[in-house]
Each structure stands twice: as structure tokens, then as C-alpha cells.
Length: 120
Image 1: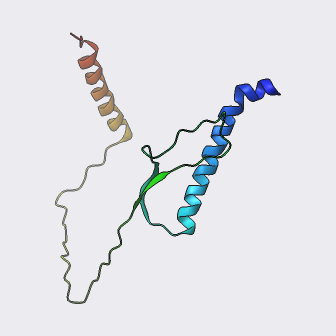
Image 2 (image 1 turned 135 degrees about the horizontal axis):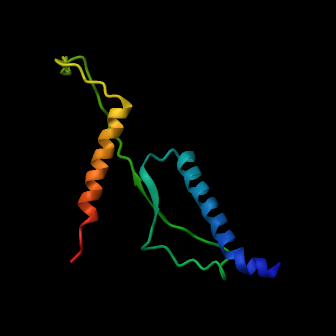
Image 3 (image 1 turned 180 degrees about the vertical axis):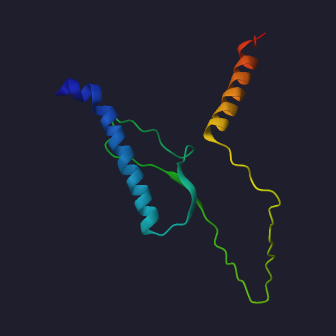
């Protein structure tokens, strides 16, 4: 058992900590109704080093970009431009075979162009 623990123990622990960490961060965001932009990022400046061999408790720090609050108030006096677009000519329909032949041609030209390229 100790051989298996030596070989895989640290990676299993790290994987489980990562899973718990991810779940906890997103649960906190949901429970507290935090409006964020993007994804939480680990804080590389304030984060203490983690040693899975010697530590039993871990503390992780994240940076979260908060979404700004704004109100868009629209009244009956506001005007919105409305445009009617008329298409003069129909969009041509291309068969799959035609599209594949064009892709093949472009790929062939690309390969010819770069297959003879020599680095200096």
C-alpha cells in the first residue's frame, strides 16, 4: 500500500484538492450571487507555496473581476433607429462538392507555397 501511496498519493491529493477548490469557489459565487466577469484567477502574488508532502491544510487566494452595476432606463421619448435592408441580388447556393474543391485548391496552393520555404 505504501508503494502505491508513494507513486500516486500526491497526484491523487492534488487532483482532489483542485476539484474541491473549484466546487467551493463556484458554490461561493452562486450562494452569494456575485456577478463576475470571466473566471476567478489564482492570485500569484499573495498565494503561499503549497507543499502536498508536509501540509494538511491549504489556503488558496483568488482574484475575481466584479461586473459593474448599471441601469439602462428607456422612456417613451427615446428614439431607436430602424433600418430596412433590401437585398438586390440573391445569395448563390454552392454545392458541398464545389466548396470542397475550393478548399482543396486553397490547401494545395498553401502546401506548395510553404513546402519550398527554406529557413535562413
